[in-house]
Image (cartoon, rainbow, N blue to C red; front, side):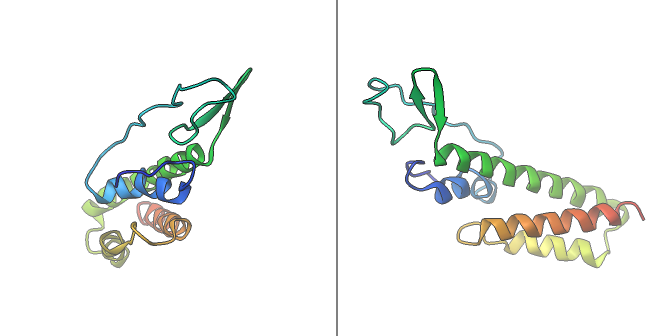
Length: 134
């Protein structure tokens, strides 16, 4: 799950710093640096930087956007897991809960479509939210 240079591989970066960390058993992440401070504005190293420095600020990279998407994926997952835990008490036999547990165990975070995975998390979140109000 070691991220490749974020500028060149944004999807791998999103995967590795988002749901990939969850699947590997980690409960958090921290980026090495916001900007690799080498060189001047015109000669800076872009390979390991989340932003490109300018004279009056920064321009974010695809790597930064991928990191943000990975964080958002984990936020959806955290919401889903919270609802699963809450429903496990009073609705432990609900087919929806069993389906969600099965999906969580089988979801392919290594090569699956991350946008489809997020959409499926949303579907489960919405369904479990209704289940919790019954």
